[in-house]
Image 1 (cartoon, one colour):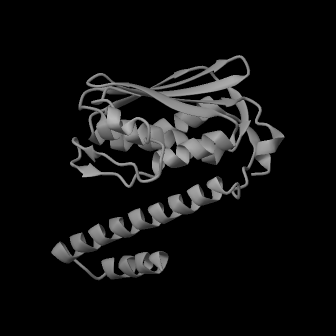
Image 2 (cartoon, helix red, strand yellow):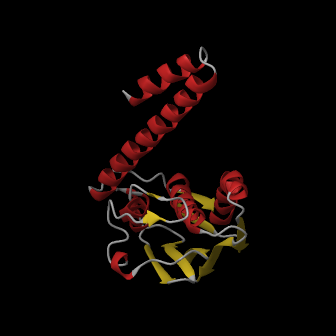
Image 3 (tube, helix red, strand yellow):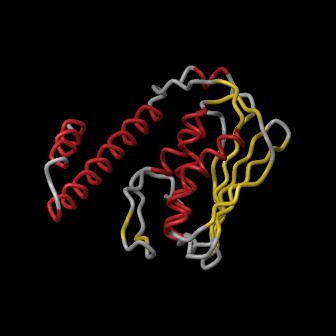
Length: 212
């Protein structure tokens, strides 16, 4: 139904001008957000029930980081925030699309809280047989009352920069997706000094996870 509504709105857009056109664009954005939320809920449910097969293949995690930076460049420019990628080229075996979504979620969250004129650090490194991804922002930090539930579904907080709340699904997806690769995700945060999200995965995912 959401796709049908979206298609209908696109057809109507061709026949509208002025204020009506702006209203249609707002409606299209709302429909897209609803579709994204529905997909996120579906993916989380499948991951929770070990019913989301991973498309395991070798790929360059640093190259995926470059793709994430490129995808977020316009949003970062509009927010007057720079995304800085650093680290080393790392070959891993995993699901490149799923891990791309994890990184997009983390960088997108950092962008939402980063003050104008600041930067987001995206670091990709290795420690032995483990690949490590870190996303650091200079935002306000995460309040104590959210720290134990941050990766739970529907955990939300008012974003003072944007004056709105998120749905609270992105980090839940990130946690389940990283764990499906046999990895871990965590964060360190200091009020007024920013937050670092860090996830680590084995360079070679275990066969156990390929059956999820």
